[in-house]
Length: 125
Image 1 (cartoon, helix red, strand yellow):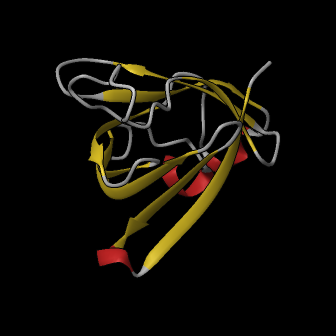
Image 2: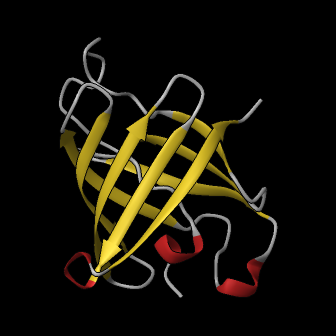
């Protein structure tokens, strides 16, 4: 099972991520099922990574240190869209990240958008 399918958050990268009008998903987030804590941060030229900091159930193949490498662009004032690469599995997904005040929602798709999964996240305290 892929990191995306088990819920590692897709992140974002923009050149000039600090711009006030652009969605900013950076930070540490808790997955809605309570079984993952992920850090979203810049990780190289034009990219942002979502890295597992803690996994409560490793039976689906998720592990601490797993990451998605994302290249995204603003789609709307609150949404980023682009691709997410999973180096552990060698897979690339299309992804959208909706950034709210106290919530993040990610949508990752494979097979040309036929198989998608939404995951909600809240800021870690």
